[in-house]
Image (cartoon, rainbow, N blue to C red; front, side, top):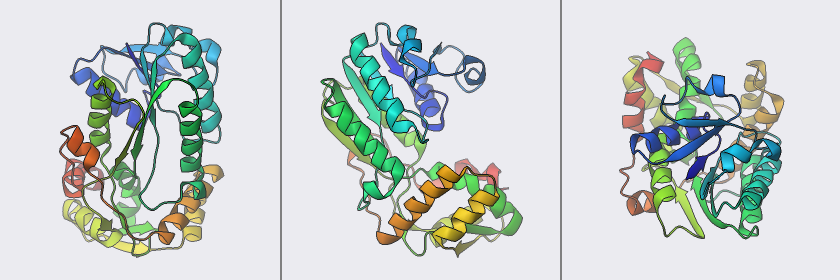
Length: 285
């Protein structure tokens, strides 16, 4: 039995749908069943539990051999993940596949979420459990959050200067994750994943323009300007501060590398940004 945590989140929900489509036996852990039901396929085995409260995880972990560890990106992420690793060990889970994050050339210690991921990875490695790390870079899906500004002003406003990034489609991650969860040779493996192209923000704006049916111009702003705009839009300060750190570190490492070895190993065709944005064209129109 496989357990998928964070099953109602962006990544978790995509992975759940892929597992369900391939008829892989699994269980989906959510904090609130009533909210999750509308997000997940109807035939999925859903169990309630809170990863930060181990006493709620008994039914979820019963009979589980392998767990996919995904949790919310918040101030308690490291504590939550370490607590879950401990609960897996007590319950007799054999193997934990940890969903992390990384970027090529990126100092993980300079961005609080990648630093927490790195600390949780080390904790898992020392736990005595079998482990595998999934390390995708930034998601293509983050650009969908800019749709409202793009529709209102025709601008893609990001603190990215003239750097390149190689974002990955979460659907690719879901297909790879599903393959990793079923593969028998994954102990001690780290899988770095990027998209197939290193793109500037001007190139990304141009691809969005094609599906939006109107010009979309990239406007380079500073990390502090981006932070202030997020705060004005109601983004929590902790998250706005974290993305300030991420933008600052990306500007220190302006050239993204492309790594498709994981796609190739699991026979997953990498999704181009052009294909991704065409699939989501309705959001910008």
